[in-house]
Amino acid sequence: MCCPGDLWCLFLSLQVLLPVYACNICGKRLKSKSSLSVHLKLHEGKYNYTCPLCNKGFSSTYMLKGHMSWHTGVKEFKCTLCPKEYRYSHELKQHVMKKHVLRRDVSSYNSS
Image (tube, rainbow, N blue to C red; front, side, top):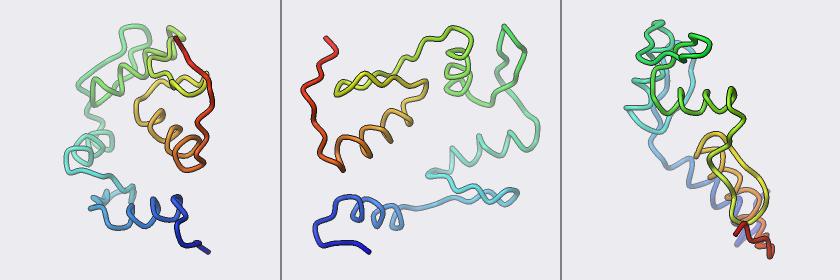
């Protein structure tokens, strides 16, 4: 149950208002038409980008770049509020929202 002024509940309620594009094959819900288009290529087995190290296919450069970090161990997206690091920008955004904004956890950590 939500309490008045509860930021997490506000965040979740706003998610309901955002447009959603659902995959007619697996039901996955995406936030944009272009994301759905990229996602559908996975079902079709169409990959425009291939990893030069393991030959795994990807439908976007974004996904290939994130995948490459598995090989290199480099996590490009770093939280400025704590030591956490992520391979994808959306993972960092989710982390900041859940751990720092909604919990109001603004520690004195400084990565510089």
